[in-house]
Length: 334
Image (tube, rainbow, N blue to C red):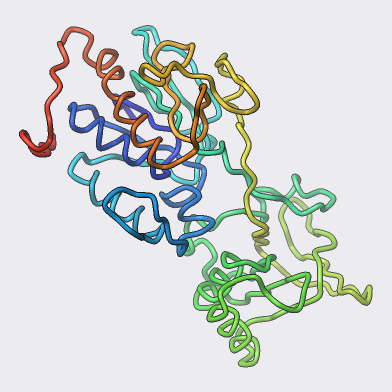
């Protein structure tokens, strides 16, 4: 079991900055995110996109902002559960919380901070019969540990950067990689597209364009996938794993069952400290709502700072909080 002061659900920019604000007040943080890496949307959807409204940076790429935020919180030694979703929440006898993730990781915390951006990102799934039957038995939606695929036969489906990048990377590890895309051109970076075509020409990658996943085959575990091209021709491809990479869709997920006041898939908060109607649970960033709400990273940073001041009272109920400026005291780690 992981024991921490604050469990932050969401490791995007606002969740990461919360670690800094909490750390200044000597509160330890553990972050949980359904994505396999930190950064939220910035890392998963548009890492190369320039951002113009971060104070002190006339322009900064999304991935650079995440790296800077990570370096900023390293002195406070945060811990992470990545590629996991918080599924269950319960109260403990001492008034804290016990969270259980999709991987059965248990986390005990005094405070919960929901910084889940637009919600829990869930993979867009192909419309295939018996898909759920093969989930976890050959069908996976994220590459958490590439070594899992060493020496295996893989089918990757998709036409964006994730599908291209993982196809390129996994050709060095897997016995066989087949990339399936419904069109003849890709949406991803031109450089990655060129590499994929070069690998296909060299016989190192099986490339099936103008094709769609049609059916999954196997008894208990995945054995092969039927793929149909636009001419209606079926091709059976052996596979130990199939990885559909069709992007992510945001959903509130299990959070919607926690007794929080919710308005149109957003969590209502008190703007004094961005607390929810459940004592000890705060919501910051794009996932919350209040009059005048602006969905900006900058606003999320502000919300994180005020949240930490009130969270202190739950973590250290017998101590008096004394506000101090970092320009005077610096950044003192644990």
